Image (tube, rainbow over all chains, first blue to last red; front, side, top):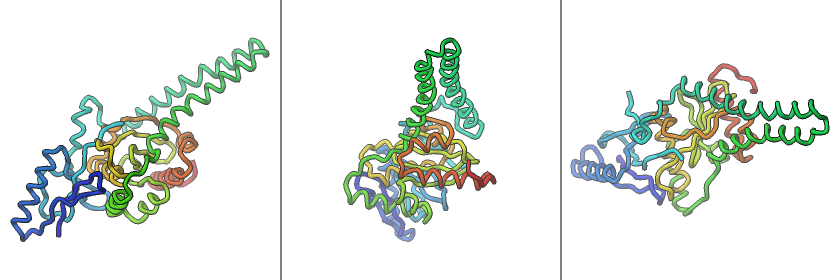
Length: 74
Length: 218
């Protein structure tokens, strides 16, 4: 089962879980993903060892989608 | 081509960091250090030449020549200084997620030092909670970047995971967004790192030497 999580003060929070053959769960995950984008978070998926990719739409076929806060120079 | 970090929009005036930019930064930092050190050494030598009784003043000038680069190196070391821990459950959960993102070697090094090692195109990175060190190929020079997640209340594992994911998504963009706090010799930085962090720098330097084909101590 694929998961959408947000890194936050609790460690991380699971926002949605879905399987590709469950349209309602996918729709709920897409909605949750958009909501996080609107809050200023960015979506990231790992694409292999040492590789990651920013995503603007929920990649339904990904196993894990991580929402992260922006970074900035200190 | 992978998507660039959206955070770059906030620093649009900066030149994107690549190998050429790193080389330029290295020359700039060497020049700054030289400009600070040489006048004090010249003063020290000149004072003694003019009057041997001025030796104490010369000693003070030499001390300045030594201390100023050390202060720069200390500023660089501070970017990976561990921050305070917060809620234990949150720490545990964040470390679990971070552990899923890295391999066994990186997990072990993080457990021992609090830094995550990451090999990438520009060199070997050590990612901390509020900054990252880039060990250049060859292992002799280190760039210290101050960069952090916008949320100040994140547990330590999530702080690192934020930076790690951004680094993996767009390494050059990551280095561009970050502020360069110091660039200089690894030995100078190592002296100013907290002792528990030094094995991570040694491991990154070893990695950088192996990649560069110069597998000998620097």
